[in-house]
Image (cartoon, rainbow, N blue to C red; front, side, top):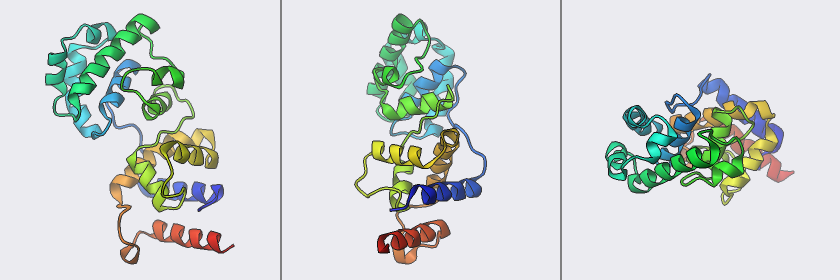
Length: 215
């Protein structure tokens, strides 16, 4: 495995490659961003951005969405995967935000995680992107990179990946690192056989891992 200093170096190398990058979900309010993140589970941000303009034009506020007919919401978001469950979840979430939180998205991870359809990853994304908190969300790209570059063990859970990267970086670096790693994972495959690998950063991390194991 790579140590904290090596992990930070590798992430900075990714940032040099990718350049400035930020959130790719479109929204106008914290509530809309929360809904977009819930919709993005096992779906691309591009697919979510195609449906949310219609959704938010019709149901811009929690009180609007909570009163929506579920079949209408399903019709709007049906091109996004798992739309039956997602429609149910965003309507329930809207009702909770309106009735329990006075239309204000909570800024506490445990509170967001209580919302239907919102797990730890959703909470971390919202807290980082909307509220500027030093949280780090782990998606499939982040997990695949962390395992291929020997940041973590192949069997590591998302929370183990999260803790490893949070420990390796300064708090103010976490927001950029998350979005950089997502773009890096979109740009480069983490499944290339070792003997065919040409990505210099991956090759460097393989070498660092070997050196660390030999110590």
